[in-house]
Length: 422
Image 1 (cartoon, helix red, strand yellow):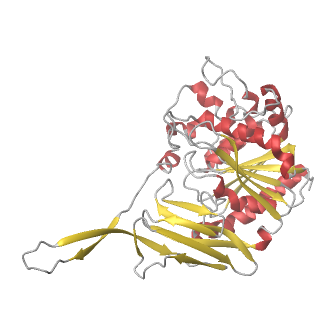
Image 2 (cartoon, one colour):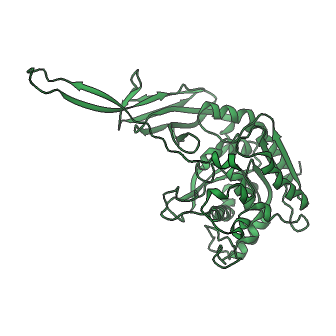
Image 3 (cartoon, one colour):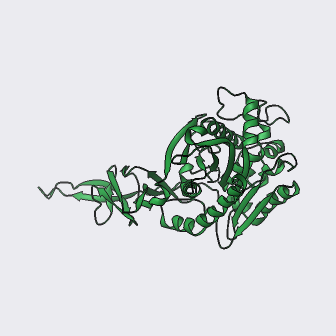
């Protein structure tokens, strides 16, 4: 648990470098020297693979660019490739760096700090037969619009839906970080994939009041309700859903599957002993009872990767409350008996994961097995944390290629066994 907590310390680091430019007024020896200081930042251009890009205005040889300059980055894929993203990366955030991405070939980037700029490209085989719809807003309960991206095979009709929930300590990242896994799961044309976002805990979204863990789960239920309402528009079957997620998203995926029986309007802890989830979004033509029933019946499979499933593993992260609260947000406390409802699980964890240890996952596996639930738990040799993430830096992409692609394929095989009897 201590390793989990220590790894979730949020830092914000801003580096400011100043380069003085001196102009001397040499008209008289008695005149005072006038010094004008021009603030600059270092911009590093990252070499591109499988494509190229240009930056305008051109970056000087020393990389020093005046503050406030707006760079125009234009990307061009090589033959056989498509654009993944134009991006820039800066220091800060939970994991040490933060990436800002654009999925159009031209991106305008204001220079406000030291940064790395680049573009990434992917094989046409991952994008040619897929329709991608980004930033579908499903609710806005606070400052941040909540949204999801849709990955749909062209010509899809009545396909099962996979919902991906991103990780980041419940306090960083968004749905874009799961696009690598989304592309892997959709490429065979057998699923509609939705990658969803949610609020961050405490005040990290800029809220004046803290956001609590149960509200993140309400966001997930709201996203599922919205997806069910609109699934047919993308070629999806709203009655056949699988949920997956990594790290914090692993907890939220397990919560989506096990806690739907607690959907209701009784409030969350407002009455002693009553903890009920009110989804962030409710379809106008459905009662709350119908939403609860539809979500519960639709979720057929769960694949939570390297997650925390018991409140004891994450409760110091949030300024909360009584034991009843923590039991209510813990999937381990609400696993149904398989005789009442079957929830097959596929679970992975890297053997070198410094954040989520084996015991944290095994405790949930033991509860699942005790309830008669089918579960496949794989420990991935030599893998660390977050290997299903996709970011533009070379190290993250290489990790995804090494672990995310093959174990994403095993996850898809698991889903196929549920929805296609493969």
